[in-house]
Image 1 (cartoon, rainbow, N blue to C red):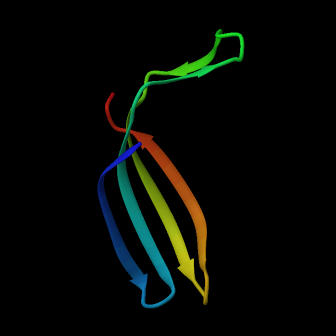
Image 2 (image 1 turned 90 degrees about the vertical axis):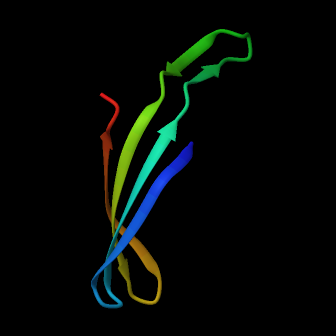
Length: 70
């Protein structure tokens, strides 16, 4: 995967944050030991949205993923 863009916003100072990543996932295949293709993915472009909190350690509160290339 390649990160195309990223941004972050502090929602509540030192407590709540959001982060957004735009990523490009290339096509892929999972191949068994005997050479047969078990699964494949055409890849695509996605936006990942993260809700984060900070209380001495980072916690990922929620994640949402949207396909952006159709």
